Image (cartoon, rainbow, N blue to C red; front, top):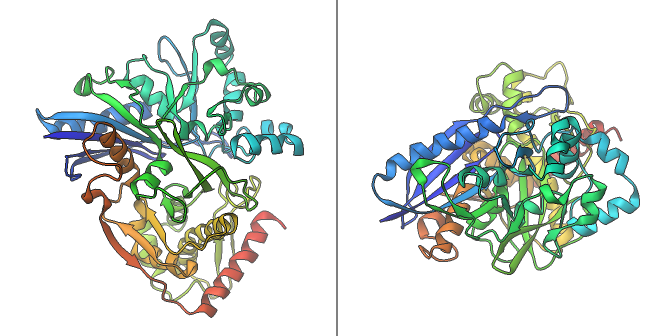
Length: 488
């Protein structure tokens, strides 16, 4: 019997799954990764901590395999987080600047003209925003003087977390990324599938330091950097949201998924890149061989993290305690929470927006605040869902969901209620890891394109259950709360 090992390196933890040929999860492991906030708007991580967390979860899962063969490794990763490292030694130059970080906002502001915004969106499918890595790379190059010297020597690598893991796993032999992750950097021409020299120059990023762009199901190299996996091929690399879409079995337009993590991503496939008029992004979902799957996506900066933050502020142990408190009241009592803790992402794209609680009275209790925090997650998802229907011209009949927060039945019922659409959950919660596993397994002919039945199994379908008038009132109040957060 052979296994597939899937690594899912996320914002707050790294996970690994070991799956057998039937798709059964034989072992799973998780290790936390610290996040630092050195000043307002800055969010960073230690590259060494990211790597050590991955080594840890690999070791725990490989131990469960015993003497049996691991046929391939698949990688899913937090997207848009970027770092620099010495090409020869592998030593990081500065921190990993995460996708939530706004430190490049001033660089973005200096570049922002209608003509350049149009060029960026037409070339990359992305709006001009500090979320994306291009300006962050420029910031890192200027913040660490040795970086520019290493560029001149040909000894600097830049890349998103997937390329860092590929480099480390292959013992420094491979500096590569997949087309989907590359499309999130704001440096890739998604029509040509190659780095844009013009945009690289404008963002002050030398193309020479960027990773090679490969199809997502390429053989990225053999593991030499972790003894337990020595010689095992890396056969899939996908951004976590792309991997989740793949694991949902979505292979054509007309279906949409939402991943609930620190932030959230809604994604649907399109035949060609779609120029959004509703605040969404065109992107590459994945590339297999010469075939590129395009997608339309909306990124929410703070999603399930809003529950953890609110729990902390309210003096509660965790999001589960927040949910328990929220369930003690029938509604939020007119209270709304807009979790613009790092600005607002799709479909609003207001990096200067700030979080607000509003609608409070003398009758407001901690339970109302707790419920408002959970409703904010569902209402943000709804905003992107509506924008996606507008851009595609399609009626999206169901929302397929994944991520840790989908285990919260109360939140998922809220989601169905505000969408007025059913919410579909899968049996396997870790769909980002599952997507990487499915693609890696298909690449070595362990199973077919959609993976084994165990990974396709559906858990339940949650249907809307509130009156239309109550839903409409909730949405109207949310719109007014957004106006306050955005300052309009």
